[in-house]
Length: 222
Ligand SMILES: [Zn+2]
Image (cartoon, rainbow, N blue to C red; front, top):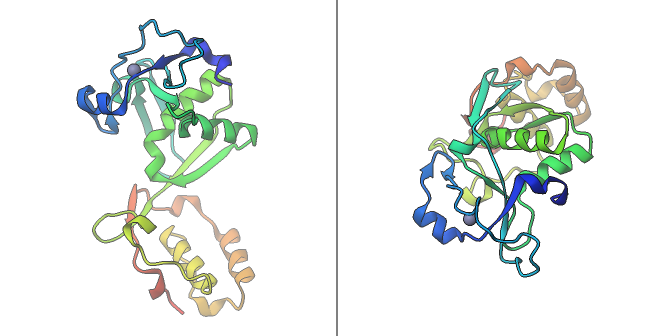
């Protein structure tokens, strides 16, 4: 796959340490200043295993309209992020490339995910254009955070979701997504609740925010 877009890529020998020390800081981490873009490292050389592969970016704005946030978000990838990595020094393909290829090969046409990935989207659209893939629709819903603004995750010791409380969990999630579900007593089974959720789903009710505070799952109405 990388061979087919070789004219848009180049090998990079910069270490993370070098970049952290010398690359300018941006909103999304350091901005790669293109140190290796015009270097003479031979990408066909057999001893380039220690090199990463970067994608040449340009200063055109890449924009998309989010189906939840209802705004047009634009990014100048070259200025805000710089030429980004497609294949890491350790040989692993980077998230941006893997997700674009996985989605395209599976025919995914609608992407629904947390707003923590919002500013990754222009990079993925840029890659879709280069690879000749169709652009899916995007919907980014707010990320669940605690009262101090930290994402609810294992890493932040968020309370676990009890697998035995399926209905309560689903009601809480629907509530979080602005769907105003009735109280749990109205549903005698999980299937019934799913039927309600599918029938009454309304995208326009999802809060148009990047983050939203979620109270403890275990306090769900019983
Ligand atoms: Zn470099």
